[in-house]
Image (cartoon, rainbow, N blue to C red; front, side, top):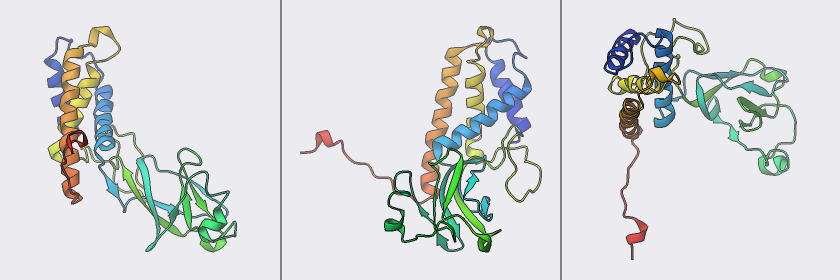
Length: 233
């Protein structure tokens, strides 16, 4: 389903309400659709990526921005070497004892993301010898491109953003359900229909539940069912 197809279907869905046609600008609906894809990724775990995002080291620079389309940095790789992950509270007080390095500069061996929001901090700080060296980011991300056409292009450039969602076709109507939910709960009382909005949110949550199950299967994750501890003897 293309972005245009989704807009047409969304407008048909909204036309079933008692709200006058044309109450929403097309760009507003498009942004709701884009938000729906992002919410789907946030709530299901789509997508894990070890291909599209990198970090290019610069002499004397220890802090780097997390790319806009990344939800969470999972790991950082220097070739086949995985950097260690640290958290605020242990890197400064026990740095030498825990990780065995004493130099403030050199080849980075550790990273953290909770020192400054939206940033990756490397330890130690790269020197000239590491300038332009490329580390690979393993991330949990949104779609590579914002469905509304306003997102950042992945590193390395490439073609213009495709006019279609990236989530699997099986779940693309989740975007429509989310957009209908948001459109029908608009702050303007003339364009509110809370009953139908709640219905569309419930349908969206159904797609999310199915998406989580599908992702577990794709990742070959085992799902176990056990009895409630309260009933165990």
